[in-house]
Image 1 (cartoon, helix red, strand yellow):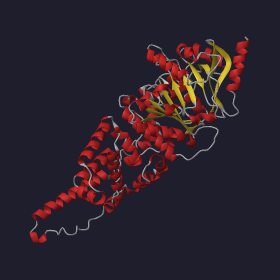
Image 2 (tube, rainbow, N blue to C red):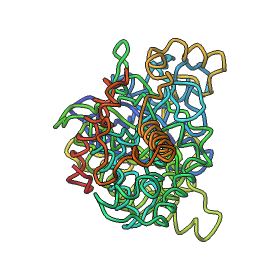
Image 3 (tube, rainbow, N blue to C red):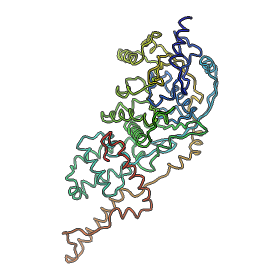
Image 4 (tube, rainbow, N blue to C red):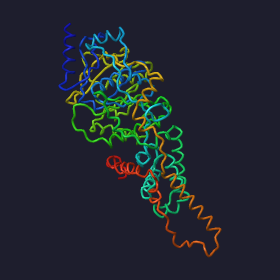
Length: 512
């Protein structure tokens, strides 16, 4: 009994905070849940990022669901990347059963089932708000990193962006980028050489092949207009944070598209959101399920960029949470930035597994109440080791925790429920419109066609009427042609966003 009292006092001291907090569950000692030994997480430090890890079937996704629920209930919007399709049930209330009833009694909380405000989104063919971004908004540095280009190839991409800026050629989608690349080694070769010097056809063709590889993973659905405004993630409804669920079930075998999207999203949030300073709770939390897909095929440059953004984005009031099987799936430099750790059970089937478990145990605070390596392999479903940063930024004691049950449905929505949710969304009406305005592809096509027509006319004309090639005739400028477009007023946003990339320029070397 004395040990239990000592343990309860230990937990109470470690998990009592001055500011607002959420209840994650109750502590466990010697495989027995301790009633009302509640594990709290302070809202103040949730912008310090986190990790939810564990073997398949140990309850990671349900923990993610519970965490997102409690954030929403406290007015904190969340973005959830749903690769398995398990999270749409957040929109509907859960159902009480005997297991949930007993768990709530042990933790000391009521069970109040509730549906939460959910927005379904997609970067592919799934139903929901279509998330898009233009090539210009990505900028030459991000595009080069995503395509994994070498220094010479990066130089060509930088040249293309500069040329398009100078000649008012909007780069909106991948066909625009391909068209300009083809132009600089064909019809525009002489002009490019005068302005920038010679460009290698072999280099350009290599870049084009890399773009085609990205297209084969479905990226053409993502690049284009209307660009998504990340401020639309930060919404509340009746005091509850809106949960934006990005449905990615159809891109699990396309990791490059997933990492491209995630990096662009983090970059856009960082560049767009103002500095928040020290606040009582985060402005937004992002949950990245199956996070190993982000890093397993990423280049060193891409990982370095993610590490830099994760390190800095917390000053914008944004917390990033990675959900994966083992902590070793996350690069060490990124793992070192994560303040909250929720570790479900791991399985020790091989020598490699045992090594990973030992390494995982070393990442947690030392405790006299547990043998961490043993606990890692013996926890049941819905249990996890938990440690978080307290309000002074110090890790809390390690706690074997019986996690609370979700208040929302632990199952997916039916097709009819999804249809109803999508049909009632005002963001779907805002973003799910087809826009294919005049951009680099069309402008260069027209220029090439005019040149071919003029060339044919000149061949057919008598020698006395042929144009002198000493000085080229004055043509209507590309800008004048573009200004005739009825949608030209939309250019302002793209140009402004292009200029605003300077925020990240100091960090990553982006062109200002």
